Image 1 (cartoon, rainbow, N blue to C red):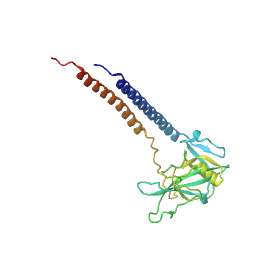
Image 2 (cartoon, one colour):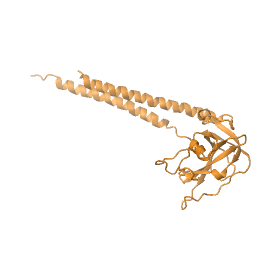
Image 3 (spheres, rainbow, N blue to C red):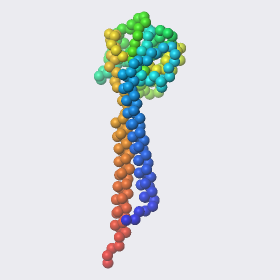
Image 4 (cartoon, one colour):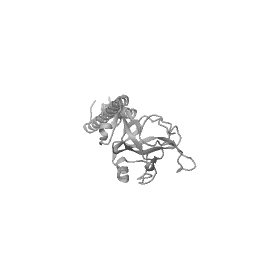
Length: 238
């Protein structure tokens, strides 16, 4: 069975590319699994104290933390389009003035939205005076899809998304570069049944098998085409 050089090279290139893409997706899945195991370890560790000293996001993200201070309710932001059990609602994000100086944003929890009047906020309680909170440090208060700046314009109480650095520039508050996702139930009428982050590992493995399947399919097609060509070249008996 003879192989023609150009078609054989094309099939070889396809196999090499699809194999590399498959291994890349596998490596991405393994990295995400390692991160998930690390997050689980952080969640069960003793909480780190957040104070006035700035903490880099990469050093604190996903760690369990505690902070002492008081909420600043007059600068609250409500993040829209955050459903819970298929019910529309908001995440209540509020600055927290730390007792020893500095500020940090706190995602306090979920609040249902008034279906007939979007801008009407359901009542909830905000503790007064200094309190201690615990939670998990996150890069942001989750992100929802938006076109352009969408509903995230500055100085609006109801927004689609909230960037920590942009909010610090908007308010002039010396914020830590992360958001505390508050845990526990203190009877403030906010829901803190936080969804587990979707790391997309299943998708990575799915793409891995797709790429490798395409490579095998290219090999099978090449062998089939070569076999057919070989049969056509066989001499016909007189």
